[in-house]
Amino acid sequence: MRILPVLILAPFLAACASLTEEQCQSGNWSGIGYNDGLNGRSAEYIGNHFEACADLGISPDIAAWQTGREQGLLQYCTPENAYITGRNGDRFNNVCPTDQSTNLSLAYGWGGEYFDITQEIFTLTEEKYELELIIASDLSHPDLTPEQAAQLAQLNSRIRLIDIKIRRLTRQRERYAFLPR
Image (cartoon, rainbow, N blue to C red; front, side, top):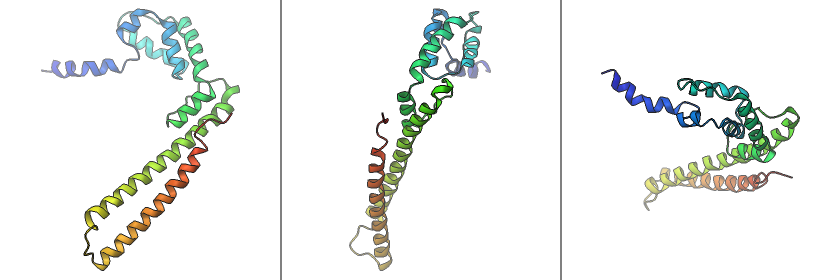
């Protein structure tokens, strides 16, 4: 019965490999390298491909992979991509030439500000929704006790403050909506 868990896990274990069997066999190492560069993968990432293709007896063409990766990095190492990566809340990998690091770091930070503000707006919106649910479910009947009336006033006050913060953050976020030129 031990074979059953292995059979169940096999597709998931294969999914962890950096390449599929078909990709290993295709031999398009320049294209594979290009995709790795485009995704900001380090030069050491080729080790994952060696491991993924080892069972098939296939070794990557390192020179073709490196050439393709360098072409992909030309697309990855742009201020526009760094900005989009930051705006999406993703990590920008340190694989670009050092002479570009200042510009890329600034662009990534600019996008990161947009992401952080968006997250704060989302959190406040969720809080407002939860407060409105409390009001709708617990405090919407006409015969409120004095304590309930006070709670309702407090919750409505908090909702007004949240609305003010959301409007302020939305205006602030507009500053980071695009990468400055």
